[in-house]
Image 1 (spheres, rainbow, N blue to C red):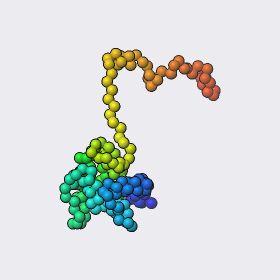
Image 2: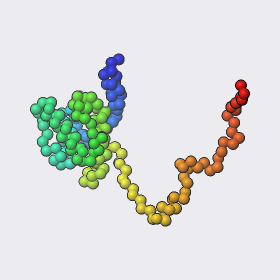
Image 3: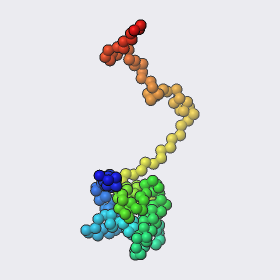
Image 4: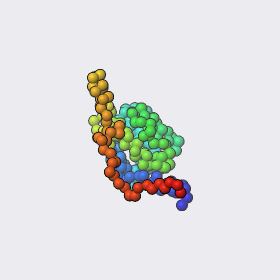
Length: 184
């Protein structure tokens, strides 16, 4: 098996059809229209128009110009504009797919993960009322301790510090003892 074929098989193995379906249903519910019947999920997203429409609904005018014709470079520009708008919306850079992942169908699982990251980012925007996609991210839980509480905490030896409450290995016998022969 060639290296390229092995890499493609590994990438295809990461893909989860249930996640693709869930992401597609979420996108359809946000934009208010179904994907064309008979077309694959990645083929509908490939030109970037649906993605730009999605981000423009979540963040109005995030992508002011969406190219509907003009060939490969115009469609890749749509995807790049969507990616830029994602980062401005609050999706971490690490969660954003590469343009070739979608346009050349190199890693559709990564595209789906980006849509899930966008779904998680919607929780942070109070003006968005749903539907949401994915789990709600945890909020910061800042705690303020008094000086007295901090000093009390320094006197406690936690179990992670190696304390095992006086347990020893005394009397433990595992197999034969080590025999050292002197003078041989």
